[in-house]
Length: 426
Ligand SMILES: Cc1ncc(COP(=O)(O)O)c(C=O)c1O
Image 1 (spheres, rainbow, N blue to C red):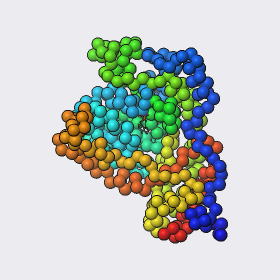
Image 2 (cartoon, rainbow, N blue to C red):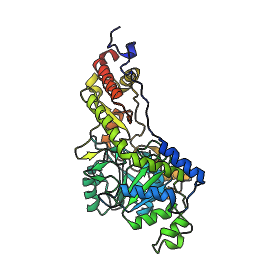
Image 3 (cartoon, rainbow, N blue to C red):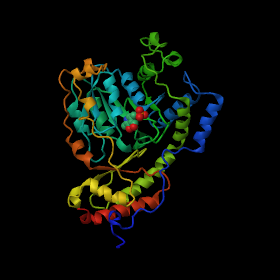
Image 4 (cartoon, protein in one colour):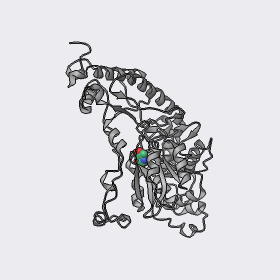
């Protein structure tokens, strides 16, 4: 048996190092903080006090270094934060909002709830974030906002997007759910637009288990966002706008408060964020380095002047033409046999996803409250050729978070071995 025989054909696997993914990382600090609250019976907080206030303040402070962000509002999920942000900005039924086609569905689904119409923009194939030229082509007299996701931790081209937004007097919402602590120059994502939203779900770089938070410089956006899901005592303490004050007892119909135990976990995670980001960056920069010379694989690019934060996912491109047309599933089978944890990413481009193409009649039949805001005909199928070309080529590798250099080097060897012996796989 040749030593370089593919593991798929009975050879020895390339990845032999034992490792485990310490992500999410739950340390003794999280356990102590949660235990403390449980022992004191603090499992619900109605106003901005205690651990919820402490977490919000720490999150606001973390984003305040360069561009002061005075307001942070926590939620029970990132989806709720996005909903509150859109409501905070005054998005109304029938408004168009330009969104990326390549993002997680929850960037966009809250807009449906509001009767707004998502207009999908295409992808920049280098950074996998929204292409500003595509955004500009989507703006119409009915556009009310632009939403951008810093996909897989890479900051979007905020200079170009903000210039477009300024030209058309539109607010920008940043979905930072993949990118906690990412920067452009010295400025953190979430502080460029009108509102920054973060998921704190269990696998995010700041994990609460389930949770979300938004940051904004605008008192008006903050108060409106608060009214959507933080009624009663908190609204009474904080809401001052005369149009909103009559409704503080009830708010506008949702309950989006963060669980105190989630806030306690998230606060500890936030304290560790920069160190964890550093560690992850070192691992994933090494992974890029070892994959760069391998034919058929293009590791993700990080542009100069930006730092990825969160590195929420590691998505490489597979170019089968460089390996004689070897299909991706076959390439992945061979890698998996070598001990590589590789899979296809789960978030397809959204412009073809059924919920965004639903007709008014269908929506009415299903009893969807936003049916009346839909156009009579099927919503347009937005042209996103780059996303459609790139997505089928993507593969997903672990986001190595701990002490991982030995296993990362072996991943490089596994890819090189499979790429070298592609002819054996045809
Ligand atoms: C880009 C993006 N936006 C929004 C969300 C929604 O966050 P949550 O699951 O906390 O509601 C996620 C969650 O994975 C996400 O990845």
